Amino acid sequence: ELKVEQNPLFLSMQEGKNYTIYCNYSTTSDRLYWYRQDPGKSLESLFVLLSNGAVKQEGRLMASLDTKARLSTLHITAAVHDLSATYFCAVDMGMKTSYDKVIFGPGTSLSVIP
Amino acid sequence: SAVISQKPSRDICQRGTSLTIQCQVDSQVTMMFWYRQQPGQSLTLIATANQGSEATYESGFVIDKFPISRPNLTFSTLTVSNMSPEDSSIYLCSVEVGWNEQFFGPGTRLTVL
Image (cartoon, rainbow over all chains, first blue to last red; front, side, top):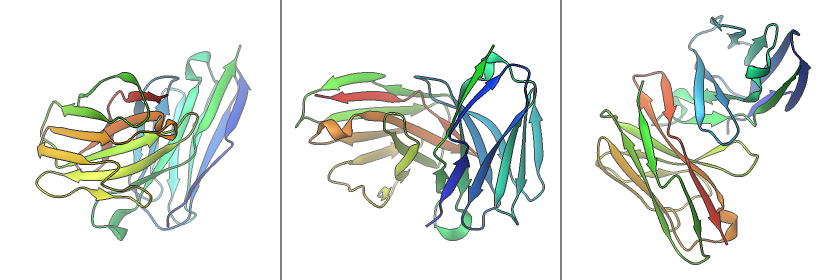
């Protein structure tokens, strides 16, 4: 069974600082997703990473994927309060099932403090 | 992308009753998914619904408790049957667009008393 871990689970950071959230998964996969969830809201798709070495950036967020290490990172640059939310990585089990099945990590609750 | 709506957005129910949640998509999609998110937790896949066939349930979820319908390519329902307080969660439907991305509905917040 695929397991997805995130580190840290809780993150409090000051505005203007940089930080990285890590997502490890236990079996091979070449598709990984990052989502954002604001309190009481649904999930917003941030990034879709489809191959080893993929890097995508949007504003202050940059995501990367290393399929050999089974690791993805979400890097936050110069954090602002608006980035406060819970961030989930999710890994596609690919051909291991007859249908698309995505396993979610536990989430990283990010709080950016002025 | 896809625009997804869910009804109801929230409900408070008595134990032993059932609630049917509707999910409507603005375009035709092959796969629809139902997730549960318990308070403060991550998302857990309940089942995958493919139009014209029986839903595929994940370990720990059974059809008698969570019957699903998928009558066409834009609509699905999830019923939470014989509810108990442990069923209090947010229930989300999602769809896969193209090969690469899942989009989520706004969720249904269920409280069982």
